[in-house]
Length: 217
Image 1 (spheres, helix red, strand yellow):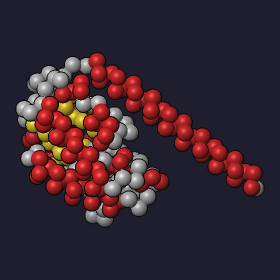
Image 2 (cartoon, one colour; image 1 turned 90 degrees about the vertical axis):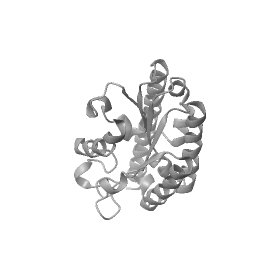
Image 3 (cartoon, helix red, strand yellow; image 1 turned 30 degrees about the vertical axis):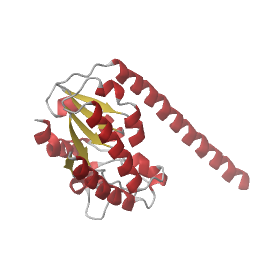
Image 4 (cartoon, one colour; image 1 turned 90 degrees about the horizontal axis):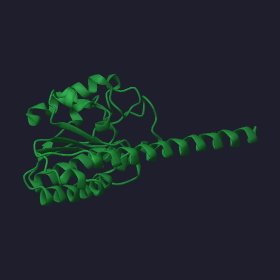
């Protein structure tokens, strides 16, 4: 029995390592792809992690100028490090949503906000005419599927959003609070909008689209 348990633990560890390797490979592939794609002054950039990555934004928003720059697994510092191809194009607008992967790495809400403020300062310095829209982190739901690295971390999203709102005010950028639209009333992502407790189904993206389309126009 002990040997069986050890084998099971080993199998789980191998699966987790394989999943992380696949994420890393995808990240590099997508980041280098973005480096080759031009950004123009008329463009609207959707910047973020897997939540942003998962949508066909130009179709959702019916706008050919909208470009997706989301990558699965990204953190706020990752956004900062891959801004050069975006900023040299001086885009019209940038919509940012990031932070939940930082939460899973045991980063505090205040630290997420500090990293986000550094990113916003970079954008304002390098592309001063770009309008910035900072979006809140969304809740997650470990009752749908457990994300072990997010266990008991719901409060960090709430604290982080509170700090991010202060960053938006301090930096004079538009704050879009998406969190209440996805909260089931108990601090969890609505179960009808997800099939894994973290990422969105189609209906979730419609809600997100409707919340930001006035700013896209």
